Image (cartoon, rainbow, N blue to C red):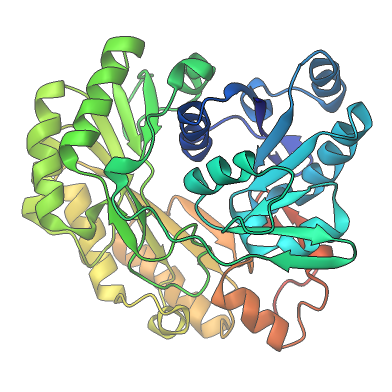
Length: 408
């Protein structure tokens, strides 16, 4: 079977956003399909940054038996348009949707778009089984589909327990040079040939605003990660790596091993850390091995708001971590948000005071937005702030709500 895998474009304030990352999840799905004997073509609309007219021109000239689309919650509107057009081209084409939009909002998707099946959760094993039973998927685990007016949700699919059993990513099918030209290692002057990779799946923490792709934590071996970096250096001459793990520093011992084994490769890299999991010795080791920047989801300078968020960090820890990071010569990427439930003029002033204490303006300051799959989303539904999930999905734009009042 010939399968077309599509990554839709991202929009923000009415404009498309550049392809900031290689679509790792789609890469694993492509690898799984190839393992199962299928022919795969990639159409990364986001990477090519093309408009709807050009998208349709290309789709009309492509040959495929089935379409798989990987989407975030913010791409709901685009999925509605894209699936409608795909069915106009060939009404018999099966359309499968994956990733967070499919996992958390399959009801809205199946009722309001032309998607045939939503993959709920991890997709590598599910797509293999689904394509083997494409005309009779009643017993395929890990999917939701529409039977008449009824939404059917099959039993859940267990995660791949050992990530060494995930398929190899077929990088050659993707426009890798487009990603390399766009991505850069944070904290360096000048451009580096950079690509993003992931060393694991999941995060052990449960911040109430965070929409996680996976529950629990599963980690690749560092040797496997190093082998992938070596391959990317040889094949694509990469000079930098952007680790896209939700939190790379979950295990101190593992970070030490990564530093020891990545240093000889002479690549620069950046990652996401956590203010209560770093220390001076670790940061120095990271810098010595090529690290140039560490992201910290500080979120607020108010301890009251951090408690409401279930961050399990202290403002004091954030101040100390940021100062240590700067002192060892790394760039701290300070991610903040405002407007979380309970926020008031006093907590906002505490955040202003936090910026003064760290002598840094912050890197990202974002409005609080409830996203599907989060405690905050459920809280908003319980409070009557979200009464129609489809309407709210339509209002998401680049990750933030365009509604006048998202939260009280």
